[in-house]
Amino acid sequence: MRKPVAVFVALFAVCCLCGVALAGPRGVPHRYLPGSLDGDLRTVVRTTDGVSFAAWSYRSGAEYDIAISRSAESGLWTEPEFFGADDGVDQIDPALAVDEDGNVYLAYTDPALGGIRVAALRADGTSWGQSLALRPKAAGRSYASASLLVIDDHVALAFAEGGRTTIIDLPRRWLLGEGTISGLTITESGDPVGYYPGDEGSGGGNGDGGGIRTIGEDDRPVEVFTPVRKRGTGSGGQLQ
Picture 1 (cartoon, helix red, strand yellow):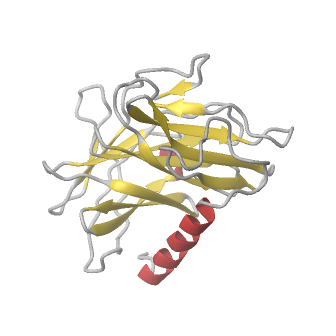
Picture 2: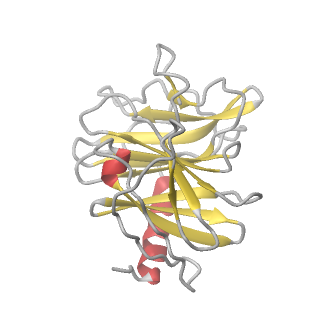
């Protein structure tokens, strides 16, 4: 069923406003420098156990990485984990969301990809799962400024493409590593932030080992795929 546009706009606005407010742990996360080249903090609180999560664009030399910290029992922030550390490209503009089961979701812009990456931390897990990557198929297009909102068994992802905002839904099971990625058809409406969820029938890969799935049959198709992890979660807390 199509969601009312006004509801999406209101909910995403609330999420964005709440995301910049720190709650719970004392001070700011370790390595975050207010007023520096670091990006703004985005935070959420996991209601199942009261743990807070913070993410920001961390300036590391000539590049930006995504830093994520969580609150510890001491009431302070933990040492951050990093997405894209020392890979030579930027990762920026994180967004966070949490579902009623305590699973945490992260989205961020990957300018080198020209799209958005989305990853999840299971409620019973200690490390982030492999990310999904979304990018436009058309040359010269790019996505930016992701926002997340959990709606039932789906995660609504909003992003900017030029002067337009697009919202698509991703089944939570995709992000949590449950089952395989299936095909979606995204049909854009006349509303600038409208969308129609598609048919979640069976889908297939293209045999290149990257798990690419193409969604969208209109003039602005999107690729969704699970990239090959280039780095693990070694002692430095580095993630890909």
